[in-house]
Amino acid sequence: MNLKIKFLPYEKLKEEGIEEVMKEVERNTIVMIDGKLSATDEAELIEKTMKKISDKFSGIELSSLELPASAADHPLARIKDSFIELVIGKKRGLTVIGPSRLIKRIKKNPKELFLEMSG
Amino acid sequence: MVLHHLRRWHASLKKLLAALFKTRGDLKIGLYGPVNSGKTTLANAICMDFTGEKLGKVSQVPHETREIQSKEHVEMKVNGKQLTFNLVDTPGIATKIDFEDFLKYGMTKKAAKQRAKEATKGVIESIKWLDRMDLVLVVMDSAEDPVDQVNVTILGNLEARNIPVIIVANKLDVKNSNAHRIRQAFPQYPTIGISAKTGYNMEELYKTVLKTVK
Image (tube, rainbow over all chains, first blue to last red; front, side, top):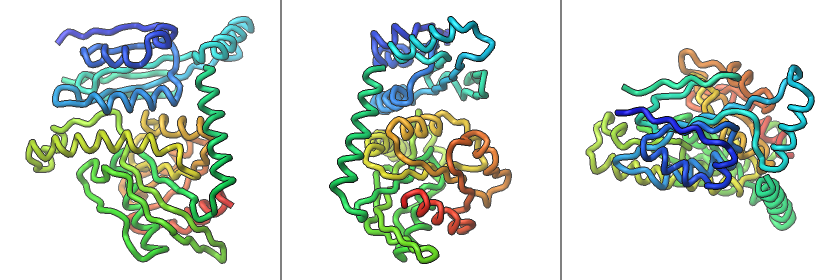
């Protein structure tokens, strides 16, 4: 099986909605988003996943990593992050969503995500 | 973001209105958590202690609880303090349900597919019921890695809805269980280590429930 990975800007996710991400994942694509999904988005994603489960699609592996601005970042960068979060809800971080038959598990530590693939 | 704030505001308003128009007897305490963390075993332990009856069936096969089940009018009495509530046991939340996993437990293909179908509906119901809860006990398996996406999603959604949380570090009777690992992962929540199966430390959990609600 060919491994397909799609890098999706958070802004595009907000435009297209979670349904579009689900379509990609159902086509065996791993979707990486440059931001952390909100808890309510994650719940919506799980609900949509459950509605799509079939003999061929068994669900998703999902992991979100929040990477808040640190004191080492330039003050302007921190202001920019806060502004973006206020306007579009984007939290600095990373989200990985992929089909569970392709990703065995995603291990997470505070600053890293580690994908273990099936087979 | 605006939508997120609206949702939070809406949830807070709903809770305020509910608090104004309901009695203490309508208080709902929910058991949430990943699959096979011991929610129904805990529900049974609580119900046995205060009503003398069990609530649901437990099994090693994942997704045994596929529908919301509740016990009304549970009167918890500990050290002279009392609380009456409805206990709500929810199906385990998962991001994947593969019918083939059930075949390992000797099920027929037809039964496994049916179980998977019911389990998906159960997960959706669990998420929908979040808004109705007044307090949630998030039940985690102390022998498993607590930084699991399901745990993170449940806690995040409860926080977004301003619902009080107690983390129950269950299965302390199991080898390699570690409640401290859960406390380290989620230091912002009260965490009580128990074994719902043996009854270990249940009184401490009851005291924490009474303290959180009153």
